[in-house]
Image (cartoon, rainbow, N blue to C red; front, side):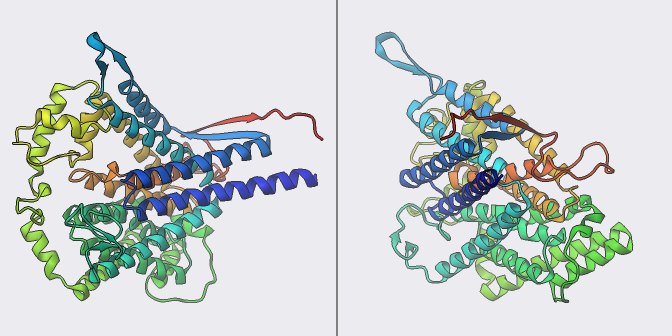
Length: 500
C-alpha cells in the first residue's frame, strides 16, 4: 500500500512538473519575440521534447498509460498529414527533385514546428485538467499577461532603439514589448485579456482577487491600445462583446460552488459578490446580464482612463492616418493589404487542391504577384487566406473543422456548474474569438509562440467541455479527471519485469 502511494505521489509530482514546464514554454516563447528565430524555435522544441520524455517516465513509473484525445486533435493531425504529403519528394527526369511544395525545405521546417505544437496540444489536454492546475493556469496567464503589459509600457516610454534595452532592433519599425511587430504584441494580449474578465464574470474568484484580475485586464488593455494596432483594438472590442453575449450561458447555479463568507471588498470584488446574491435570490436573468455588462464596461472604462493618462493623441492619429510609413519612405505594407490578398487569391486559384506547401508562401508569392517585386512578402496578412494558399482547399476545410469543434466545446464548456471551469471556457472562448478576428488582418497564428498559447487554450476548453453532461442538467457534473463525450481516453497498463 505504501509503495502504491509513493508511486502515485511521484506520478502527481511528475504531472505537475510537466504542466509547469508547458507554462514555462508559453512564457519563454512569448519573451523570445514569439519564437520566430531558429534559436528560439529550437529552445521551444527542446522544452517540448523534455516534457515528452518526462511523460514517458511518468507512464513507466505509474505502469499505466492514460491518453486524453479531444476531438479537436483530429483536424490538427490531419493538417500534419497534409504537411507530410507536401514534404515528400521524388526524383524526376534529369535528377530534379519534385514535390507538392514550392519550397520543400521550408515545408519540412514548418512541419516539424507544427508537430511540436501538436504534442504541446496533447500535453495541455492531459496535464491541465485538474481543478488545481486550472486554478494555477488562470493565475499564471493573468499575472504573466499583466507583467508583460507593464514591461511593454515601460519599454515603450524608455525606448532606446533596442529590444529589452539590449538587443538592437534592425528588422522592424514598429516593435512593442518583446515582439518586433506591434500587431503581434496586440495579438498576444488578445489571447490573455479575456481570461481574468471572464473569471470575474463567472464568480470564479474571491472578491479581493477579482480586483487584482480587473486591474490586470485593464493593464493589458492599455498596453494593447498603446501598441497602436488597429487590428488589436477591433479584436479587443469584439472579444468584449463576445464575453457579454456568451455570458448569458453561464449557469445561474454556478455561484453555489464558490467560496462564501469572505470579507466585503470593493470595486469588481463587490460587483462579483452582488452577482452571487442575484443568483441566490432568483432575480431575472436580465439583471444578472446587466451586472456582467457593467463588469465589462468597468474594464473598458479603466482602459480608457489609462489611455487618457498615457496620451490619446497617438491613438487618434493612428486610427485616422493608418499604418506608419516604412523605413524607405514607401507606404507601409500593412496599409496595402488588398494587393497582397489579390495576389494570394491568384496563388490559390493556381494551386486549389494542395496549395503551395506549408511555409512555402514566401517562395511562391513572387510567381503570382502583379507587383514589381520590390517588396518581399512572406505572409498573406490573413491567416485564413494563408492556410488555403499553403494547404489548398483541403487545408481550409481542416481549419474549418477545427474551429467548429472548438466553438462547440466553448458553447458547452460555459455551461459547467463549476464557476472556475465555466469562467475559463468563457475566457478561452473570448481569447480564441479575438485572435480569429485579428486573423482577418494579420498573421499572428504564424508565430509559434502565439500559436502555442492558442492551442493550449483550445485544449483546455476541449477538456472542460468534456466534463459537462450533454443530455440532461440533472446528471451529476463529471469530475475534471473524467472524460466523457468530446474526448477519447486510451488506457493501457504498461508491462513490467519481475520486482527486485
